[in-house]
Image (cartoon, rainbow, N blue to C red):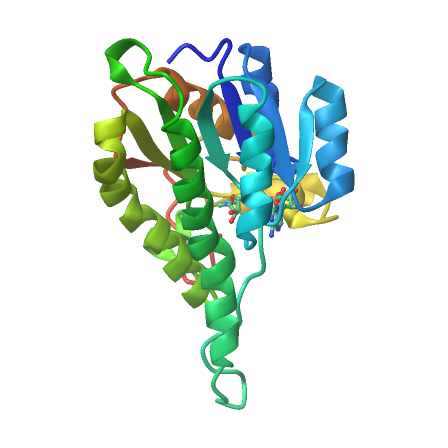
Length: 257
Ligand SMILES: NC(=O)c1ccc[n+]([C@@H]2O[C@H](COP(=O)([O-])OP(=O)(O)OC[C@H]3O[C@@H](n4cnc5c(N)ncnc54)[C@H](O)[C@@H]3O)[C@@H](O)[C@H]2O)c1
């Protein structure tokens, strides 16, 4: 797809992956809507790029639709990137062998899995209204899973299930949307240096998490995610697949060691 002139909605656009992707798509000529729950983060990125900020809560249909409507005002919507964050879950049993609350599981599934589908279905309906390009292509949905979908660590039962769900829905979504020329591709990142790690020292983070990565021996950088997202948007033959982006990292039970 020719990114130039396309409209892209980046959900979680104020975060690490989202902001890096918003920057790349903007540099490639897209009109970008930065959709994020956090107004300060979202407007900072939008102002930097001269883009539109739309306050968006991925768990709320009206709010997602509002971001998509703002995007449609700018031109043909062709790219939706889903890269919002959310909470983790506890271990299945605590130190006293007490079971984790069921709500701690469903909450993680709601924010990561159900909300990703919520954005996907609404974004697909918006993209479906754009005129087809060369090859009959209308647009692409780019979802964010995690390598926890395949080798989740201790405490990642809910997160691994949610991310595994995103991996599993990639092909059926692509099949559902194929008649409209809408592709679906998922990125499964390893460990990346983003604000998701809060205020931790980047050098210490890199030393801890990077040590387990076969090559390159460091955490990923958000722009490396964005680089792949750009390639997914541009390469019409990428469809219905999840791509691991992890330097060959495979999590051990505790993650890095
Ligand atoms: N950083 C990593 O190492 C890593 C690895 C694998 C997968 N991931 C996944 O990538 C995604 C993004 O991660 P990141 O590192 O960029 O995180 P981040 O914390 O840097 O950014 C997440 C963004 O999502 C926004 N957000 C949170 N809740 C939201 C909601 N309800 N509605 C809309 N926006 C909301 C936040 O305001 C923030 O700007 C997450 O799904 C995460 O699980 C990250």
